[in-house]
Length: 360
Image (tube, rainbow, N blue to C red; front, side, top):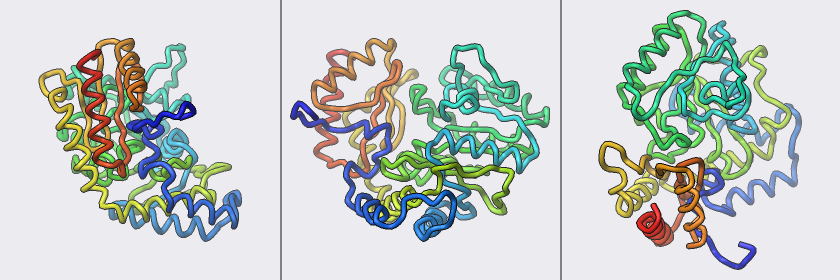
């Protein structure tokens, strides 16, 4: 920091710096690409070709990369356009409390901006802690039966809504509904992907197969990049309007390729399991009971507070104690890097536990 203090980072820039700050392999890949070409406006480059091969090899069998985007919001917009073309339907459905971006459309999928604006073609169904899953499924089915919804969006672990995650039965029920009603299932793995919660993608934990996967944040280790992938026999079409001015540029491609190659060598599932064990060892008591204050998995954890003021107070106290955490509303978010040293993680978690004991 500017004042000479050192912070233990449990925020990692909204979870983007997944392999840690100044990761040498990513630095070197970007520097090398800077000496070649930065951006070609969609014309093919070896960097993009190499990235596509690397991403396709990383994705679960049967999926292929459609396009890179600059942000997760843009990738979710691309997935919406893909679903409209593939299904011939113009409507979409999301669950309240999720986060798919802050554009007009992506925000409408998940939350009310409080400005009175609405998109008639986008439906939002109530979901979350305290809401019966059967009720949510029934409301989803009622909308889907009209035959106009082309895409159903899921964020499997609500990282901005107190860490809520539905049951496996619920997610499988959604998958059955979308198949029966002719809609595509889009899984937004922006935060949960790339082994952050244990498996490669969170949907694999629940045993479902989406039609489209949206990913980002971790995949460029801090470089602004996201993407969308589809299941075979998916094929990009001009009407999908994939890409934009800065999407699929050579620098982003180099960052993604280097990040995935590095991730492959780090044994991520073992490291994530160790992070989860450390979190539960220090804070596990908060995850118990009918109304747990701690929710999450792997290297993604959310601490809930009764009031936003208390959450902010704890975030400030932790910052003074030398720990950086995410703060939003009445929650704190812990997103340690995959490569965090175990002793640094234990030190940070001990400070979190102490602050919660004093102030939480």
